[in-house]
Image (cartoon, rainbow, N blue to C red):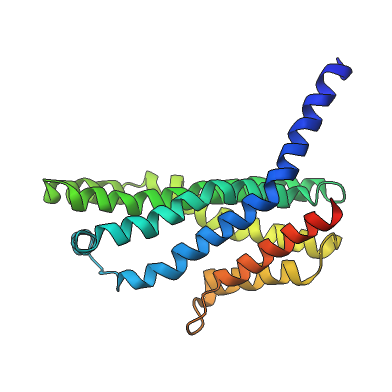
Length: 218
């Protein structure tokens, strides 16, 4: 039994260690691109019907920006799970908690992008009024926050905080890396954009730092 299962476990570990650093950087850069380009779409109106009408005015740009954000989530999820595994030897419970929270956060983030892309579908629909009505019903559903927004906010905030705190405590990577993650967390979910500089640059810096660390210790 031991001789047949050990090689498979080793293979799974080695694959994640190989693709994780690159996936993290690719996902972080894609997430940054979406965040930086979103303001170029213009100010977001308050009403859903007005938002859909705005999307109809620039469908290609909207699809590109939101599509980039959605496509960035799968590699970002893989990379964050790999990053959490850096804690597994010294803080295994923290590593498991961080990975679980971050996966939940990435699910929420992906769903947020899908909801945004649903506005594009509504904007291009022959029956725009009916599509807007369906979207309104969807966004008014009490199930939506439980399935999307709670996992997104709680998973991302608590997951990044847990990962960064574990990296700081264990010292398995340079201290500036988890500091970048923590400052990003405060700015992105608390303070917001500071002038023209988007907080996601800090997340990219942390991701690149983690990837370089993996290359050094390989």
